[in-house]
Image 1 (spheres, helix red, strand yellow):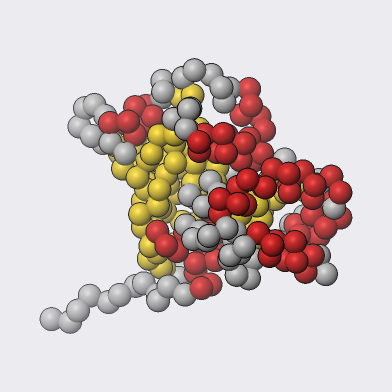
Image 2: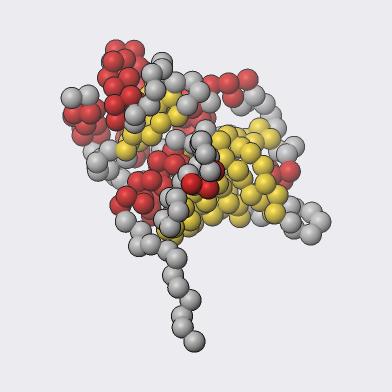
Length: 247
């Protein structure tokens, strides 16, 4: 009896970049959890997706919702990201991440950072982000499945999605001021990042996130991800990279 054929391709840098771009440019996604009561059936709902400074997805959810109660009872979850686009929905790339949910305490050091990053991506969430029943969960990636289109299936690990850099903490400290400076004083450069490098349509593009691996840009309706050629190891590398991208 012959072995079962392997439909997976070898995971390469192109696949890793596509996976990271799909996740970090997603405004929303489908979250699958296990019902806390009954027969433990899968329960799927749509959630807004935020991204923490290390690339892990973040969600803002109400404790009154079924998916939040499910995550509290069992932290295992899957997140599907990727827009169907025109034509056959299955012809477009999508990413399924198996995650372990971690509730972010309001009094934790991470909460302020996650809140600020989430609201830059989803400013309308400011209406309810501080409601007593709402809170953040980090979805720590464990493994992922990438379908890059017909015949392009890959298996990824957490290391393929999460950013590893000694500059993460320092970038988190300076991110807010750097974004404010770029959006106020270098609007043409920001527009160039979106329309030239991301091939996005014209719009009022702003930077909404800076991390060691790239930039997140938004025009209020759409998100774009611009990945750097290499992960930043020190914050002094950021300015030359931004200048080069505008060249």
